[in-house]
Amino acid sequence: MQSKLELQMGDPNENADLWEERSPITHISEAERPVLILHGVNDPLCPISQARTFRDALKSRGWVKGEDFVYHELDEQGHGSSDIKQKQHVLGILKSYLENQL
Image (tube, rainbow, N blue to C red; front, side):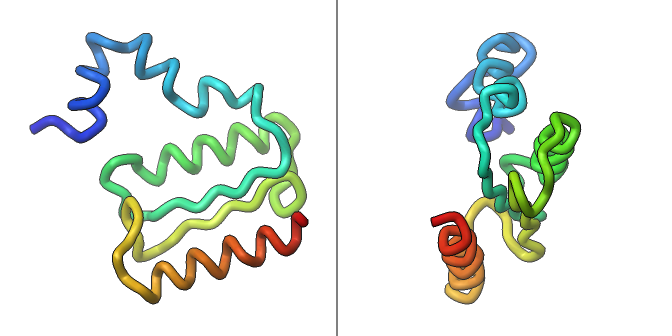
């Protein structure tokens, strides 16, 4: 069974150039501070390992967690949520982040 991304972008092996071009990690050198990363641990579309790889790549570029970027793993969430308590939690993190940045 094809994933939603495979339906949109084709087979990852056959369209490797497209998949690489669309990957955020490909463009990490272009990232500008500050960055907020929120990622559901149970995300079936984009595994948590990809968020961790991105976070680690920022660190390897000398970015400091808490100063240059904020990283949150959302324990109960997948790729978004329809649960009101989880939405409130995410919006609380976003509100705090924006208050600190603005």
